[in-house]
Figure 1 (cartoon, helix red, strand yellow):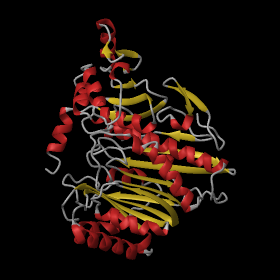
Figure 2 (tube, rainbow, N blue to C red):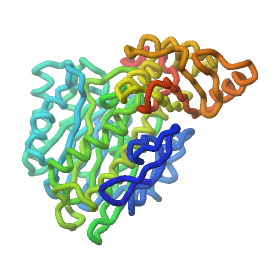
Figure 3 (cartoon, rainbow, N blue to C red):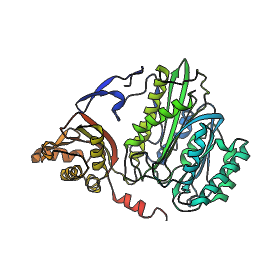
Figure 4 (cartoon, one colour):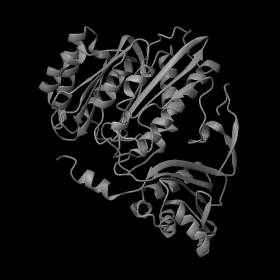
Length: 453
């Protein structure tokens, strides 16, 4: 559990005594916080599993001062919801993070300019079309849509941020978006959270959302987050859109710092296929409706909110991996005993990105040689004769060599499970790094071979 004060308690993890907040996937609610994963996190759950629960739990995704709406504007061929709107009744302070890909979609370029003002009142999201690689026309169409929304809602266009996800290289269907705006605006409601969640989905098989509350200066503070993404997911944010809203009262610079730190220990620690999207966006809006004194620097109250934000983002990140395209395995990769954190990070990603390793996991083949092969070309100095590998607690490699058949059989049983941990000990130091990934299945190939059709 994370400390309630400015520092953090230490825990034992992978044989080392570490600050709790550095242990990425250790469970533990934020201090004085209540968290929930009412929909979309369960490993076996599908959309239909939640239908009967949405009305019951919708109230948990209400945040004072925020309204939500989602409709089908005809962008998607299947007629599912594809246009969403998040609206704050008062201009909210905003923090944002965007794709590191040099090829940035039009909405990302627009948002990166507008967010410099630090204020946002509405986020317009569409799925089914990325508005990426569409040149000057894509920028014009994005601005045209936001101008139309601003006029109809009577708000400053500069306070509107845009987000898109879908097929790259296809012009945004502006007319369909504009024709859908009146219905979208009319449908704004405190209870519309789930409609937005559905509207942002593409190859996702389930909704992904989190809520949490905490107390700051005697006031209850609410935080709700949603995320979409199932493929093109790798570090420096996944192929994903994530929107978080809170009624906390936090200064912009501090809000940005907290979001960046939260992303570093959550969204930036997952990988599905090693790809980085053109549209990655994470936005956090804070409208101050909770009524507590404004937070402008780190302290006990700021730490309380920060810890809650970390917990929500971590759970959202885990839900992304569990819903990876075609994924059948949920895998944690831990590299420990490295000379430094950067070495551990390179080694962990080399394993997680290896198609040979990932397909072996899919086939439930304990082919430990592929792991050592990935380590051998990861770009860091290693001593192969000192490497240990285990699946959960079952050792499969000791001092760079396979264990006896009896022990290997135990390790082979581990990877038949839906979820397991791979631990690699380099025996070169005390640094470590962990991340989440999946296997690589036939369904992943099928999904991405026919994405545009």
